[in-house]
Image (cartoon, rainbow, N blue to C red):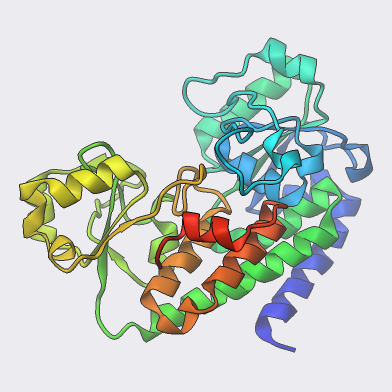
Length: 342
């Protein structure tokens, strides 16, 4: 039995015990943090997504339980999603800054569980406690590190009563993460990258942040590092000219065009060598925006760009991901619209 399969089966075994005593088991895991008494899986008929990363996790695991999406509208302009997924309403965010979902609206939706995914820090723990106190609805925080995707999927899937489907998703996540780790070990030299955000490309994700984790798992080195800091930061053109990244990745066409057309950027190695990659959102981002399980696909796409051995099979990989994580058939036509080139 290979290592990936063995780890998956071990995770499923632990989840069996977790299902029997969810509150006790969850208190001893670093990935799931419950607030209030979680309902038994068979009692969960509707789950509220608190934010965009939770949208991704719930869409993958249990779209039939979703009251709606917190941050996305898919009913028009995104023909690659199934009719059922496209009809999910946008409800607004409960988590993070500038919440757009009121408690009054939340109560009318009558969910049996609220789920949030991402950073599990004091701010989000405090918000979860406050929401439970105000609504009496159980709240589950799920740690959102991409490297933990397999365990995240199996454990959350057990809570939601979709363990079999979660095991399939976790198996795919384990395989891709293992292959990404193997690729990272084969890089012959230090390959550097910069993620360009904002209209002028001068906002970026710092080393170790959820925004750059998918790239760093492939062994690439983030030029934007700040000791003791993660998350997003503003940088200067002077810093970029000193850093000279090998690869620049943008997920917004406005950003990409600014980089390609502005004279100051032409002195950067990645621009000179035509290694400025545009990964357009669909509407989900490939590498963050949101920093959810959608990043598995972005990590795989970037690995296929760098590793010629994966290029021929990436279309099949992406179509399988759409089928399993987005419950939608991705046609060859729509694939080529989303990925004009690796």
